[in-house]
Length: 632
Image 1 (cartoon, rainbow, N blue to C red):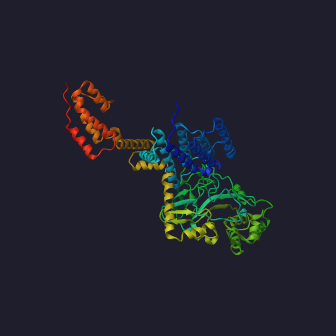
Image 2: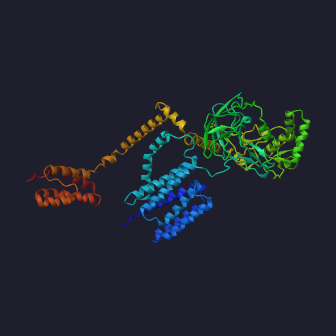
Image 3: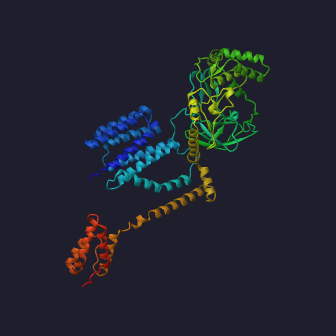
């Protein structure tokens, strides 16, 4: 016997859930997978409406081989979130060509749930939350329709699914709060993204002809006390040592020795929420006191490095000391590294540096002369510089005389090294925008700084499309407030939901007085929460356990049944009232004669057209006055 096909409502909900699950994974799917899914959906719907046959097994097998080959050509692998999501989406599209029975649609719903899980693990922004919830709702509604025997309308399935999800929500919250979490990004998927924000492991300013500013945040910081002045709000990123005359690159750094810095002066304590980046550096205010965290280390060039890729938004508790200084002398290896210049590259800059050095009495005087050259030599700050040639520093100093911070940092460090002063390029973000609602500073990835701009706030920076649009937006007060509320909500979401870790679990358990803050505490809290949920669920569903309360008509006939049973004329549980009367007519004619008029009226009221209120009242009155005849 073949398995029955599901109702059209269930199929439609399952297809809608699958399409939405594919859309929320669109950022890492192969370009051809979503069109394939849409095409398969259209062909499936057409075949169902017109009664056409689905493609045969041979065609479906060939399609599966082609899909696998397409994924291998697109990603060179079948592993990873992007390749896996593409393969699952395309194979589910192929499944639509044979979706007939309920079990086929169960497979499709399961694939949609796996795609939803992949999206949840890969992207956790606040704006995605309602989209993820909608996808889960559609999947639950489709499964509700597949589990029932009688086809139900879409509205009913959606309503039932919403009720079931709401019943499960308290348990989900209990597991979120108290199920023990392993330190680190245990559930994080490896990211395929590169160069997510504005900093990188290398810098080639001569290659850039236009720098576009952006107001997308690279990090957020909430300070415990006063906000640092704008001049001290420099967020230190990757440090670049190696230079080939055109491109600066990072050098593999060692771990900082104890006592590398002497901390003094004012300190700023803050919570840092860092967006994902490809360089692995925790971008923070300088100078940073390294936190006591096993998943980071402090390098010998004063970078805080994550031991694992920063593929997820993460939060850190940090302290910065702007007046901190290093008292240890440079080693010979460090001096060689930070004095190295490529031979036969940028010869005019080298010659200029030697001239300035010859006129300077010491290092400080040499540095001052280079600053004076950049300040008074007719140089211009611009976000649309000319491209530079192979000797990029020479082109900037003697030809174009225009660039942005990357150009001038490259030129300054090159001159320093040529003059015998060890130097390196420190990348980072300058300034930030204060959000009075959430208390957050948002640092702009490309808010580049000319020297005279160091004391300005973010919206005073000029020159790029992004900054122009930002100034227009910030001229509308209600829009400013809306953006700040949204930014504060995002910050709260990342800090308290996405960033909810093992330490915060223990703090919560301690606040709830669950005893010692350890794994046993979480187990007790989890068990208590589950018990409370089960008790609430049992109380909420108590009516279902007792069964639905019978209506007035049924209660009236039960009263008749009890009176007949006491008189010795019991009705069998499976026996209808009319069949009961027929049986009585054969063995107890007197009892049947007394009961038959009421039985016919009951059957008509129960199974016929809706009775008038007067008819129902007459029957209830007759049922109350009925007396069973004595058994003979």
